[in-house]
Length: 140
Length: 140
DNA sequence: CTACTTATCTGGACAAAATCCAGATAAGAA
DNA sequence: TTCTTATCTGGATTTTGTCCAGATAAGTAG
Image 1: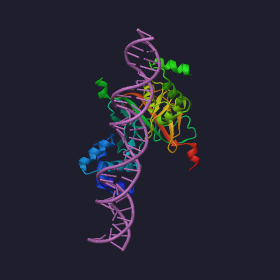
Image 2 (image 1 turned 90 degrees about the vertical axis):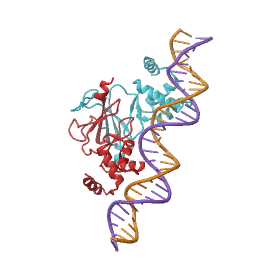
Image 3 (image 1 turned 180 degrees about the vertical axis):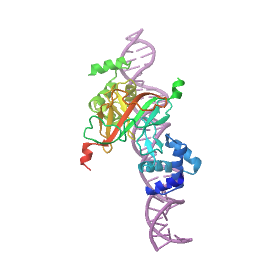
Image 4 (image 1 turned 180 degrees about the horizontal axis):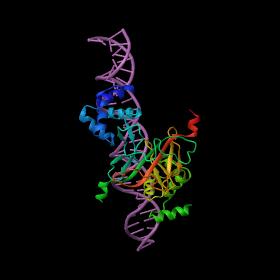
């Protein structure tokens, strides 16, 4: 896995640093749909000296290069995931914030065409489903 | 209009205050798809002594009562609008943030059914379309 | 393998957006 | 008119994230 990641980084002209690898591995193995602070803690298990700023820098850099994907549910800190390139969507529990992937229900990305685009050139349709997860259903 | 708003407020057991009316009117007449800071300024034209906190309190209260609707495009402060109850969607320009309403393209609210709901009970599908508005297209 | 360029990292200050708090005010019920 | 308490005011605080300057180290060129 490290090897593939290194190739992806070099292909994007990014240096391969241990901080960067720690962040990517934290998201991949511990941080699916987790926020930056969680990722800081998870990545520090791998590299204790890691600075908070390096995590934020890398989350931004990796997101902009398409190596990570950022999702930002209303009113919550941004979450990160390593599944990129397919514009899938997300379903978020209103109570516990647990988040799961939802495949695009109408064709490929961008998967939705509005009836009237007001002259805009649309390149993405981002969908967030809101609901209550099985655990929170039974605990209410 | 004031009269209708007063009825809506009383129906929600909310007191009719000038601060509250100033906020609602600011959103209705000047603040479509604007953020809280803009609404503070707009509402102060009507009521100069209005505190910032009263605006935030009211935006929260009115949103929770369904008198205003809050939208939160990724990475931006929350925006507010008076069009409520139809779960329409939004199209946001990546460059200038201009935002327009988009009618639900697939039936009524919630307008989308994912293929697999993971056991969640879904009550809303929130869609944000991202693109480039006509003005920003021509200025690039 | 060594030197060099500069991307990246560190630590601390700072900013944006919004909430919390305590006392003052005023809406609306009695 | 009085009273209760929702609401408002002003200031401190929190959360999430960025900016900055100097130190470090990745990758390139010799």
